[in-house]
Image (cartoon, rainbow, N blue to C red; front, side, top):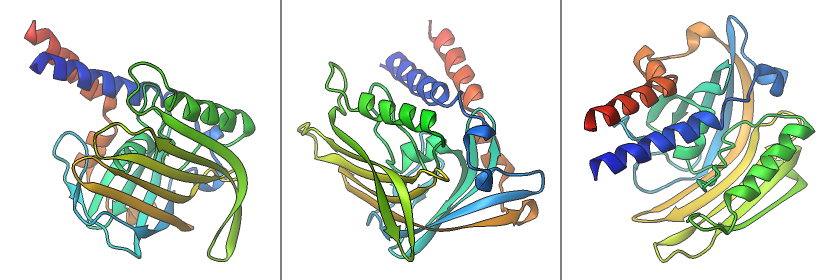
Length: 254
């Protein structure tokens, strides 16, 4: 049983790592790409949040609890093979890459082919087409995909506050599985900047989970204003290290 869990963890970490290797700064809008001394902080209003604290990750990183009308922020610190940032939501802050955020906040679909667009997506029609294909593949009704369901997408104007954005919208509804309420997720991404403009996602397994976000703005901040914990930075940016540790553990089990 322990070995099978280690294999599962290895598979999950490899999935998270492999789906992120194609990104580069050129794939993102210039407004969000960090410079040597400055970073971009994105903000969202938490319109709806879980009533109970939600655990983050597999390594005891902590749990987050946010209130309605509070602010969630993501400070983008680095873009190389994937996008890294400093997330603050409710009482919780952590350094994480965009895929981590998508997975932990249920901003995507964990199908056999994962669809984890997160808070910012790559722009350009080729990238958007690839994202669209991945979304449909994640929900495909194929053997072994317990998150199969109905995926839809469209381009449409989305208004938040006084601003209107032309968005690529994804709407997903999981097929009934017999385990709680199926996942239902709505994500709208601005086609110009790639920023998540609106999100509404929910699922019930043991407890009811809901998260509703509305984009509220962008600001440029200096490096010195980011309260980054170097230990958290090491944890979040060390996907390859974690994979190596798991591989080592598997070998010792033989």
